[in-house]
Length: 82
Image (cartoon, rainbow, N blue to C red; front, side, top):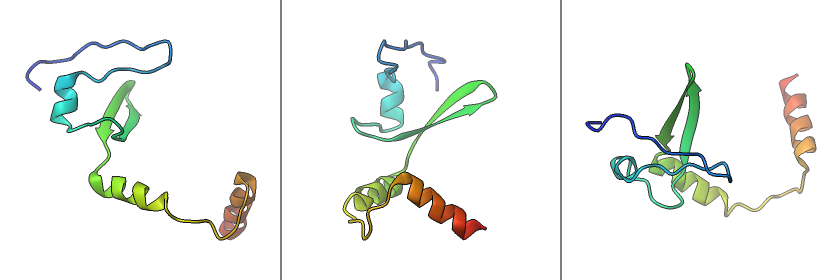
């Protein structure tokens, strides 16, 4: 990036604004999902590709066959692993 690092601040609501130049380069729009990774003490932000966005959109339409709590799902996974 030709402009070097850009400074932004953390709001009281624990949010940051991604500078417009970076949003444009990454093709980020309101509602875009990003992945944030801690790497060697730095936060690395990557856009999630459109294939994954399509997967998220499709998964919202799936209706559960059983209504399980998170604890019940965890137990089922644990049982399968052992």
